[in-house]
Length: 521
Image (tube, rainbow, N blue to C red):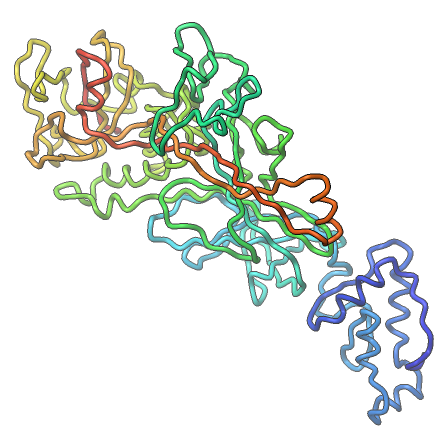
């Protein structure tokens, strides 16, 4: 075949291939459709293969590389071929799988969920697997310039540059507050929640049982209309955060999950965490089990609490634990949260919050626990053996009202940052709530009700997401490229579930509250 000869290619992707061939460096691969690959390969190989055309090319009379490229083929080593020699597989045009991997401070990337320090840089990368691979396990990403080794599914694999145009979009997945729809009313849109840190008007929230005071928040203790897979339903929302094969994460302490969506040659595939508006939790069912599953890439960032901890506690285990505790920001409060929910950053309650921080820091095992369990169980030890109360002046006393001085310091029997203050609301030896000592606010190095604690809480905050909403006519115009996307602001309520306060604020909840001080061991 010589340049100028007519060519008929029985190739269903011909127009697309020729359009893509107009951009240099794009890997088009070979035809995926069955029955056309051999014919297309033969067509490419025949370009300038004749004696006359070869001689004309040598003399610069004809442009064989241009002819080759016009057909969507590759010109290499003075020959035209259907695939480039650097193409490791026969077909690279159909996406099969997308996985999000992350790298800390430029180290080896992996798909493992990570807990990182406040000052560590985390990069997210999308990697893809393609149909038609010879090995069945070849991975690619244009986030890299040359082949490198990463860890996927606990195995080391080599990822190579894809070298083709693909559209990559990134999304952050976050939890919403509980029970935001009731009897067909969207409580967020109905402005049932006022202010950035205001407890909702629980009169508008559904009952979950007699005596629960119209309990509005997530819980695992009593069945209700929101019960789903053995636990109260958690709803998630997603917002776009950027494009490209790689993207950075924020520096705020807390837990966030990420999803990548890759579109290549008209085919769109998502990493774990795809949304599904038809489900009650707004995720595909495969990604939900009493909360979002560990298959969705998670980054939990500690705070710099340990670095800024005051003397004499700087460098202590308690200060370090507090930095891990802050990684639970943006995780829902769930009354009766399980060990699985706590360890996977799905949710926590007052007892599981410090237990989770301690487990993440030390790797030790603490089973499902409660405030009472932490007050009397084997996971902790007493710092001061006796029970304490606060008198009307905010000083600590014993059961007879006699002053008891609790010193704040680094000694074994002194109160440390990170120690647990367990509350017995009824003074009946049944402990109801767990708080964590945060610091000596007034600097007198003695425990009083002016000092600070942190605990799980039920605050809410509003998050506004831009979301597309359009009429059928607008949708038709956009489909025909005659109209633009129409956006509206969708409000979401998510959680501010780790709260700091002084002890006096907690004492206002009940009268005659007894306390014990415990420390993890």
